[in-house]
Amino acid sequence: MKYFTKEWQNNYKDICLELEVSLKAGRFSEKYYQDLYNAKLKEFLEEEKEMSEMEDGENEEDLWNEIHFFDDNGNLVNARDVMTEEEFEKLREEILENERQSMEDYEEEIEPYDEDKLTESFLEMHNREVEELRQKLPAEILDQVADVRVLALGKATRKVKKMIDKYCAEDDRNFEKAFENYSKYWDSISDKIPDNIKENYDFHDCMILKIKNIGDDIVFELDNGGGFTDIKRIIYKKAEMIENNFAKDCYWMYDEIYLADGGFEFHISIDGENGYDYITLKASDVEFE
Image (cartoon, rainbow, N blue to C red):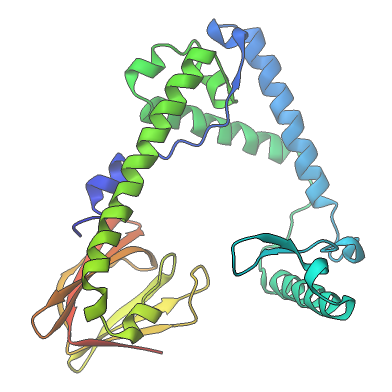
């Protein structure tokens, strides 16, 4: 990989904090922390209880009474303004049917509400968030934080919030820079890439189940349930493996394609039990099934 490297991935902190300014966050106070924790816990339990009490199809007749989409000029329009009532109802029913199908295909059932279990889960999540902030935030920010537990619960002084917002914005920019740079490179070679590759080579979040050799070809078998493709097999024709760090049931993260003598060089970053790693191979062409 030249763009989506291990260093690029490891340097990205991906800190997601929605902070509110609080003067009380400026000094350590166990009482303030406990009060804040209990309030956040109560809010979490109420949301979980509400979700557990939801029934399939509940108030379905009230869903999707308003549908908006972007027209060809990029303007957000109300479907009712541009459709007949019959067309609108047909669209609404299609959306509802897709949602019903998604619920039927969804294997996980909503667990019964268990306050003790959820209270324990909330504490575990909170402790993980606290530890992640201690590891991810630079010392110059942590030195200004009176209680990192309070920060994990979404409260900070105005100064700390400003520092974190700036740090996260820079972190995001550095992360996005790799995409921008690869996009520029891709634009420079895209006219030399066959249409079948440009149209189908999109496997982010697919699980790689198996890699095997069939004659001169290398075949990837995928579980595409988490991805955005219908393809389940990638057949690299007359292929040669250059670097293979495949781990069972690893996920396809990012990819890069380069022109090579007699074909193309494919770089794939994966994430699995061995962490973020690479698979690299050369092939004369690619087929999809």
